[in-house]
Image 1 (cartoon, one colour):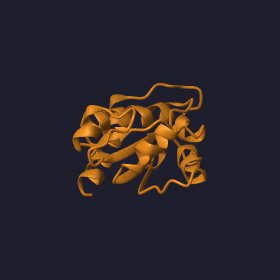
Image 2 (cartoon, rainbow, N blue to C red; image 1 turned 90 degrees about the vertical axis):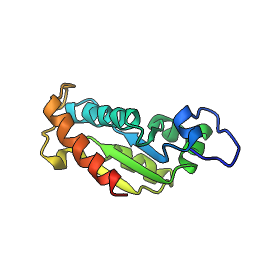
Image 3 (tube, rainbow, N blue to C red; image 1 turned 135 degrees about the horizontal axis):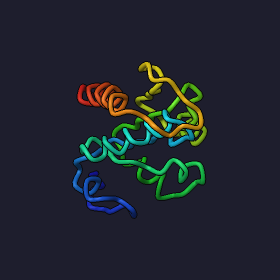
Image 4 (tube, helix red, strand yellow; image 1 turned 135 degrees about the vertical axis):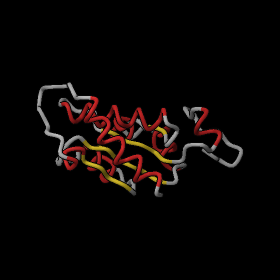
Length: 136
């Protein structure tokens, strides 16, 4: 991301080059939908649609995590269920969320204790979020 000639510690090449300006936070909870949310975040990064920021770093008050967020054009959160834990962590930290997604709202059933999800579920969520982000 563009930082007016400055580098923020921990930035990757996409962030430094200005190619990715969307900070992505995901759930990585102990269910299929939590793991699906995280997998989608990774796919978005690999597609150069944004960069991931450590949610635990925000909860722990790590300065470099906050710096990465401050350089973002937009902040998106992908939660694995309606409890919206990732969203709540960011709200408590005072971070403005531009787009929030709950994968269960796309018809994917949460199975607590299971970390397995299908390629079809990945396709459903990835397509929905990618189309939404491409319209930004």
